[in-house]
Length: 82
Image (cartoon, rainbow, N blue to C red):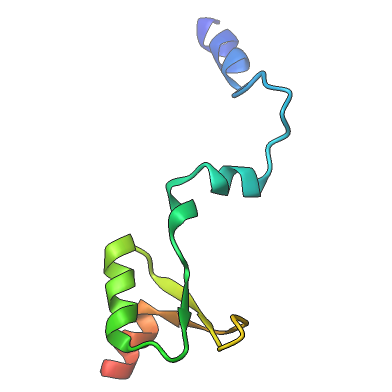
């Protein structure tokens, strides 16, 4: 009986009237300061440096106009090296 009442009360995470959005959560996270993009002119070494520095697995590849033109991932790099 105690457990059921506790679970019912614990479902409410916030009493704030501010709407929660994915962007707001992202802006408040530790990932907000990471640049997840890399230029298509960058070296493989630069990509690996970012992967290891930020503990991430992929980067958006951008052209000279900062338009996303592809994705570079750790798995893709490993397949190229194999």
